[in-house]
Length: 502
Image 1 (cartoon, rainbow, N blue to C red):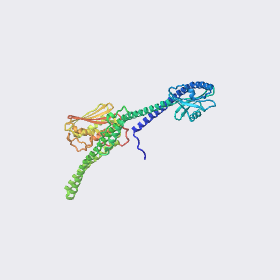
Image 2: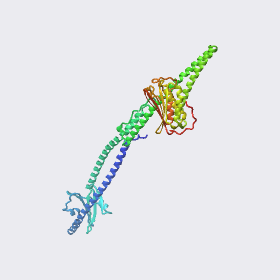
Image 3: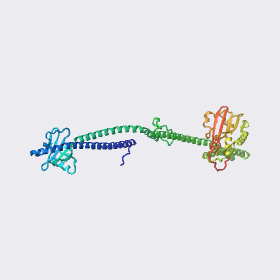
Image 4: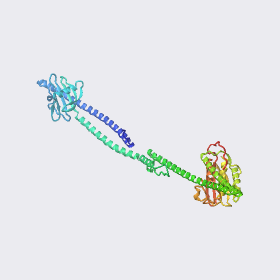
């Protein structure tokens, strides 16, 4: 079974502490080795100094012992000599006699055993200097010399001070390293914890967002990484800023999705409502025709049947217009309905105004256009439909005597078409939904026609298909619909057949 992965903070702490520990160990080894070598060199110098004093003394005492017929021993050599500080190891081997050795301290002199002297002579067989461990006495640094009269002299000093110094050094380094590592661990943990706090805030925010149901209904994502954790000056802070930006985009997308769903539901409800009335009429008049044919006789039955068929035809035409308008909107949404060419807006305005005047003889119609042609790339038939819908909208929703002015004007980057009337204006509550499908202005304007409520929606779709925009400003006595068309096409011309204006 695999062990659970370590957290980022644990991995960072392990890496930092491990790396620093390795550096400290290397430094400690180098420091100890350097200091130990220095102390050993210094001790060797002290041993050489002690030997330079002991060898002449042994030579002198050997001559004296020979003159008096005495045996040369360490006690005889060191008689009357005092050792200060470190303990001194002295061993003399007179020619033809047994060796003699002692450990001399400031307080006493302790003779070496035969085994101790054997250890010393064995260590110095192949080298003048050696480090020897004498049982019960410790480690010594020794050197061997020979006097003029053939006496072998072994002189040494205890390594106790060197060992004590090295032990103290190791203890100090170990304690300092341990304390430093503990302080480093605390500092690293605090630093990493504070540095990763924004990342934890990001993770917590993402977790809360992930726990929300986002697949249905109206959804609003209010969770955000706090501003004090999303500092763009730091790398982790930029992650928080990026997450907040992403959540803003997702929230906007979800809101747009909800609006589209609501619009679709309203669209289906409105379309069903619009289709229900003509379908009910067709069914009623059909039943009436059948009843008249079954019960009536002669001219009376024919008159009832003719009237019913005329009503059926009228409702069928109304349904046809509604279906054609819906089909046009669907094609415009797909971008497959427009055929681009060069459109003379001045000529188009003249023709549209001429078509609108016969149906609105009780209105005053005016045209404002420059003397020279105003041209833009676009679909002539569909732009004619835009003007026809706007003029029909102005005529339908204004009382008799209203002045309707159609203006064509070149502007920077394109051209504008403006339809102005001095009627009662548009209800402010309807203004935001004016270009929605099946929108009706019944509240603010007396609606006289049986239109489908798709005219302004179609006009907006056509204008946006040309890369333009349509807007409205309204107050009592001053209502203006403005269509801005760019000088260049928003999309490459499509090679599709020209569709007739609706």
